[in-house]
Length: 481
Image (cartoon, rainbow, N blue to C red; front, side):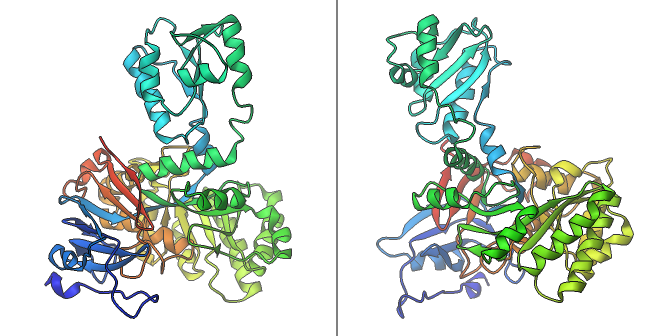
């Protein structure tokens, strides 16, 4: 029967069928498309999904220049979309390496390798607290950091570990990698002074890391305007994830002057979302309401942080006032976290079409009771989006999916529901449900292949790793181990 579900997409650039650029075959495809939930293979043409169906039928589409990926039965999903991330903070977790807990040379090498895996070429690996009793050679360090200078202080900062790139940059002639006194000062003088403020390098690092976790889209809740840096990286082919860049709601009036609207931009970099913050301060309610109504009237998408019953009650009220004042439109207000809801408020999300943007990795546990909110919200018909709020906790979507499914026992979500909220749910939350979030013909080819079938054993979700990540049909991450 799968044969009859094969669908062909003929691109606008030609009236003739074009051979796909890439086919992925022999996969366990879970599409998150409720009309056609499973398949075996897909074809990609021009960065979009051009066919979905059986391995036999998809293979027939391949031409002489078509590349083929044999998934060997592995699970293929839409790329994950993190609806609440802090990109600069994520990237900066790689700005300083902490070696205080390492006891062996192998541990040092492993940590250096992990940093080098995600840092852009040329970005320094800086850090401290290395026990000088840990013995390792310059060759060992160089082997795992061939493109990144290394400069890590010992627990006694009178000496440090350096690799050959750092030594060369400082014109230090040393064969051991252990430097002190004048050598130490020479390397210190050439280390970057803007290491934690170099936005392009920091964003690229975060993007590389996200891709390794199967994240193909991120919605940035940081207050800085990153659009220029993001677009520059994208032009250079260095941006591995799509980004919806949000700024502080306090800026809405300035943005309105230049005509900023919700979800404007291209498929890789978009803006037009503004984020507020409310933590039960009564004196802040008036300004919150003014900002929500003003940004909404100007056509921006409004998101507000709220944790706890009172905070959610106030934010819901101010959003409902803005809806009444500004009139009906597809605005997709969001409450970030939406934790600690009163049961009576759950129907208000649905009635006012307000999106609960939630982070199961933080708020979902056996004792928190917040899992009841997920189930009740879904039952009421709410459009939930999932994210991680990294780096407060880990960025890995599989950790969040595990929490949503397994914490709380019978109160948990099904695996299908949890993955849907991390894909289609998050896509809807950024006005992109027609472009991504599911494996359907015509949608962007943002995909992830996992090492194991998490549907086979939901208790083992966290043990799965990402094998490959594709954005726009381009391989942006491959686990070669």
